Image (cartoon, rainbow, N blue to C red; front, side):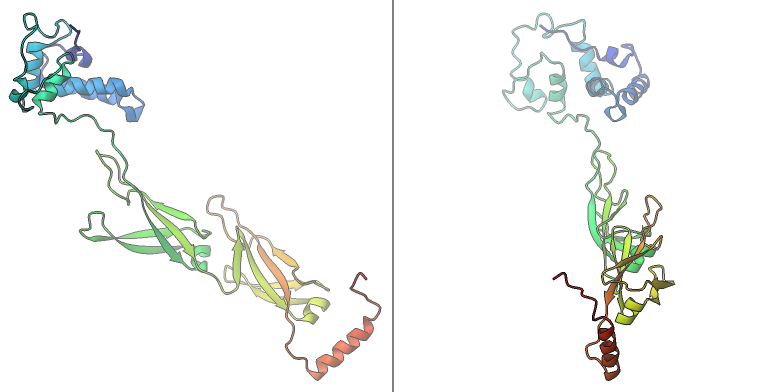
Length: 304
């Protein structure tokens, strides 16, 4: 013999409570003990089980007739009774035996073993795609429109994607709720967009710093000069080249690099000097270099 659960006590209602009273009590307790809001999952299942029985007129009638915390199973006088045909009564099939030490078995049998248990809502799976943008679009920011098939394949929808300025290659943008549908009432997943940024003819970036290679003639590098270079924002910058600037020297222009959309800071523009040598010297150039060579005879660039 075993003591059984008092479903009325679980919901905190009297045995003569109306259906509306039972429903109100269940909703109040379910909100309090729901696992998704930090409640006790075991307690929530007890509340759900009690409501499942007491909210159904047939189940409640059987419960009132056969079981409570004041009674025992089997009821007095039923010990040794043959329940071999009980499975036929509830769709279990001939010869099916039921263990009535747990009252929930009788209601499972009543439902034909199809009783629905609580299922935690689950978020749908994310969808993903790659989106190609130009270097200028990533630098300045832009807006794209994507036409995607709906999840059920019945049609398509156009999505507006805002790309903030300063995005890097491989950065992702998430569109909430545009993924696969959730289950058991859960929210839809997200659409994860991975940016693929194309190359620029002049600029390339290392994190937030933007680089540009600046070809200089030999005289511009050695004598010093002023040259005009493009900036990533489209403006022109007049840059001073110091005298005797060596190749691979990097000159920095602060705040002209790639913006950071999270920190709202900006990298620098890095100008790398490269020497541009002519493929063929003119007679005038040769004479000038010969004079330069004579003036440099005392300079030995080699350590040996």
